[in-house]
Length: 473
Image 1 (cartoon, rainbow, N blue to C red):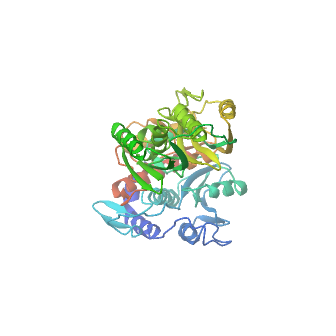
Image 2: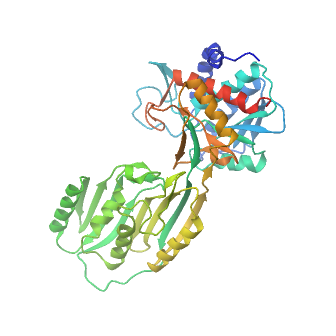
Image 3: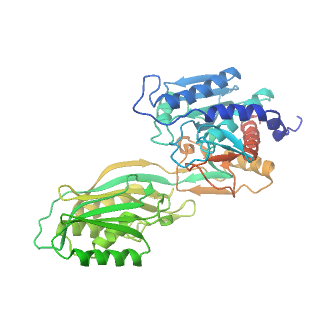
């Protein structure tokens, strides 16, 4: 058959693509659990965005389906096998500091600006137009193509969980919600708490008694703030001097307040994604380190010593006895995302462990449980998302490599990550774009944007990929 110029086909539809994307971006599709209904179980905004895509697909001749407001899909083609394209329409809250309307879809300087421009409405619209191109060209296919549309990717993934309880699992597919070239492996992600199980009696008169301590709210983020309140018997000035010297030596920012015998210490760290704790400075761990250097009550001393001995300067699980790495996904990492302590309940650590695809998780958890028990703690609130890996020799991977290289002229190397994408929801799936190498990742930041050039290029790549995956062999 005649060779198809995919980019030329994209250019023919450029104005419609941009117009549809702008309308899509203008929907404030942020999770809203306070205003739900049977038709909109995750809020009106995300439901409106889902409806927008389903209506657009219906108009363009795709077969739409709304799966109870949690998700939906658009399908075309015939055949037993199903190619899945997993996208999501929900976005994180816009935040402050924008120089443009965060839900305006403004185009300037070769970019389109809005919350969701790169994560994930821009790539979703690129994939949609890729399907539209293949359909409108009437190309011979022997498989069905289905865009699966999620509404809860930025929080708890209830959308895909509900979807795959009720709908067919694709034979293979990709998620346009990450980086090019191809992410073929993702670490497992386990969240759990270590919670104090016993209360200790003080047999000494310490300089300070810990009234409260708090750091972090999310397992998957390095905390950038920590706060400790101490009831100080004597030596307030000396204690403050020790704190000032500590933050100076650690090159950190901190503050202190004194009120009715209660000294409050606040410490600022550096936030980072939990997939690589070493990219940040964990405020909770640093403040715990300071607290172990002064005279505090026995119960608190035990807690902060546990925290420091097993996690300060050790994000690889060495002290826990679970350090591990493989050639596919690299090293295991542990992020201490949440820390809290008070006199009544004792201490808690909220941990986020990202582990390689060949790691024996059950053995590691037993080790951690044993160590926790020895120190008067137990493992609670355990949840796990298994690692995901598609062989480098799989037909899906080889096909996408071929397409990427033909469209860009660049090598399609394989990437493994510590994060998680919708690709892990598929039995055989990879993450495939739409952020190109060398581009800054501004997802979740103010003035989020996607280059128009990249949007068009991604559409051409996805169009050829869909055709190559579904055509007659």
